[in-house]
Every structure is written in structure tokens, then in C-alpha cells.
Amino acid sequence: MKKPSNILTRTLSALLLAPLVLLAIYLGGTLFHNFMVICGVLMAVEWGRIVNVAATKTLRPLGKLGWNILGFFYIIIPCGCLIALRDLPQGEIIVIWMLFTIWAVDTGAFFAGITIGGPKLAPRISPKKTWAGLAGGILAAILVGLSFTVLGMEIRGNTVVNSVIIALLAQGGDLLESAFKRHFMVKDSGNLIPGHGGILDRVDSIVTVAVYVLILQTYN
Image 1 (cartoon, rainbow, N blue to C red):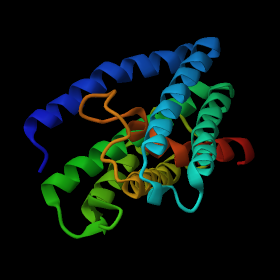
Image 2 (image 1 turned 30 degrees about the vertical axis):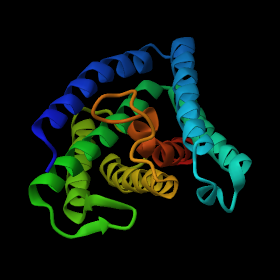
Image 3 (image 1 turned 45 degrees about the vertical axis):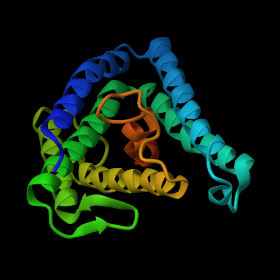
């Protein structure tokens, strides 16, 4: 179980950062574009630091250049998707729904995992994740979807169903970043956010989710 002090640190960090993120989303335009550029640069710095200090054996089979190219697309695609989503009509609602769902999934999975425990979800990739945590994350996502539906803030497609899909994709994005860290034998991508690690640690779910939501809103 997480130490109470670590839970408090995570909570305080989230409470301080969330209003800034939501303000940037609400204001949109150049401010949000610049915000995403800053986030992208910080993510790139973290990725580069991991790759550049990696042991030679972990750079196989792509090599340092190959891993950095992969990192470029790993970062630029979700950042570009977020900018494109915010620029859509009612884009602020779409991005806020997406983030609220991801945050709810993280919170639901975290507390279900530490209180219920049980069988591991992917022990070789992320030993702390459990099936109970996944279930808790899905339940939290459903509650967000229902809340947006009740408030009349419908997203293209069924909001509840798409919230569940986001929950699954968010867990997938989390596991993907965990696989990268395990491959390079690092615990966190950085230490910029107390209790959470680096920027990449905090936005890993967005990497997969942002692409799906953009496709959903563009082609549905």
C-alpha cells in the first residue's frame, strides 16, 4: 500500500496542477498551443534523458537515433491531437471530458488497487497494477460519462460507452509507458511533479486516448 505521505503529495500536486491545465484548456487559442508546446518540450527532455543515459544493451534493436525518433512520434502525435481537439467547435468540452475521464480512471484504479488488491493485471510490465484497479478505473469512467450525459454535455457517440473505451485505452497507454521504463530500467521518467514523477509519467494515458478521441470527433 502507498504510504499516506505519498498519497498526500500526489493529491496536492494534482490539486495545484489541475486548475492550471483546465484554465489553459478553457482559454484555448494561442495560450493553449503554447502550453502544449511547453509540455511537448518537457516530455522530449525526459525522453532524451532516458535514452541518452541508457545502457547499450537497452538501445537494441533501434539504437539511440531510432529510440529518439520513436520518442518524437510518441510525443508529437498526442500533443498535435490535443491541439486539434481544442480547436474543434466546443473543443474545450471535449478535452475536459477526456481529461476528467482519464483522471477519474487513474484515481479509481489507484484506490481500488490499494484497497482491494488481488490478481495482477500485467505483472511483467507493471507489477502494481491489478484487475481490481482496472475495474475501479472503468467504474469511475462510467460515472464521468453519466455525469456529462446528465448535464447535457453530449460527446459524439455514446458518452458512457466512449468513457469506458477511454478507460481501457488509458490503461493501455499507462502500460505502454511502463514497458518503456522497464525496458530502459528506470522507475520514473523524471521528478518534475512531486508524487507522480515526470511529465511522461503523468500524461502516459493521453498518448493513446487523444488519438482515439480525435478520430471519434472527426469521423463519427
